[in-house]
Length: 130
View 1: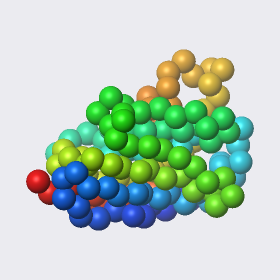
View 2: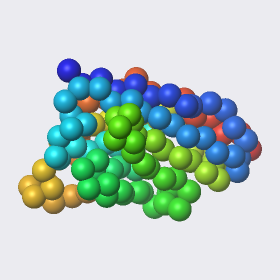
View 3: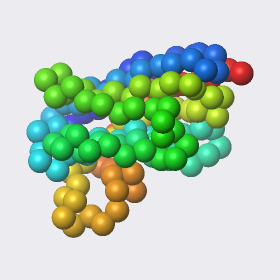
View 4: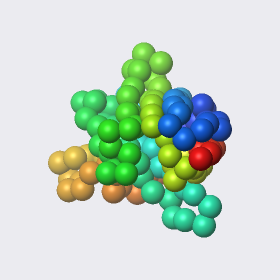
């Protein structure tokens, strides 16, 4: 059974930093095709992907809105994926979720940012004040 648990959210002022953590349990982290992504959803808005990583190769992807400010990384020994968020802006305020799935990149022509994930955590709130 796959279980994802996020932590690390909180309230910060604009320009500050937070590091989110996603603990992954179950078979999926060991899969050769495992992908872990961070999504966010602000009130009244659709959920959007912000960053993703193929845990096997360590290849990372970012949406333009966060590129250069956010960094996704992994600790294979701990089966954790992190999202380091720097230079936070009020528009980064949202509930942040991690998601996991197996994506065979020989068959999937998009990026892991575009994929419809099967497994989701409960989310952690990030609030950035101006």
